[in-house]
Image 1 (cartoon, rainbow, N blue to C red):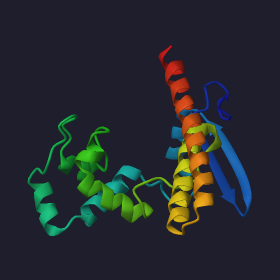
Image 2: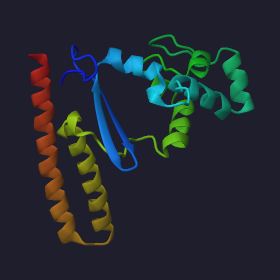
Image 3: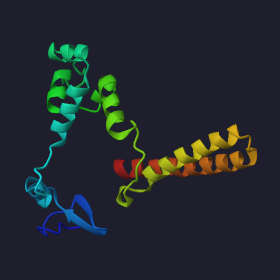
Length: 183
């Protein structure tokens, strides 16, 4: 899909606005989306930079002992070398290993913002079916646990069979993606 604004580059940013029940979708390249973000998406309110917002939450969420530990250097990620102080200051993690390494600080923040540390929302159509499949398997497993606890074994057997079938489809999809990406 080509950018709707410049008509030259590939659209990689997809924006959906719903105003008074009217849905408006925009498909932009990264360059045009950046220009629009600098303009504040047409709103009067200045745009908020997410990493500054997260940094303020990290600093406000820390107790007095934690703030002293952060000020004195705190911990440093073994993989990328980002210090806890830098994360609290910038609101940005350095790498994927920072999430488990700083989990005691990041997870309460995510729980506070989202109510959970796992994504439970909608999955966009364009992201593919595997993510939806994983979510559906999780829902079925919860239903299976509930059926077993209510001793509804017939329903539990049906759910178990559906879970096995979906896990097989998921495994085949993951293997297909892996072979597509490697070759």
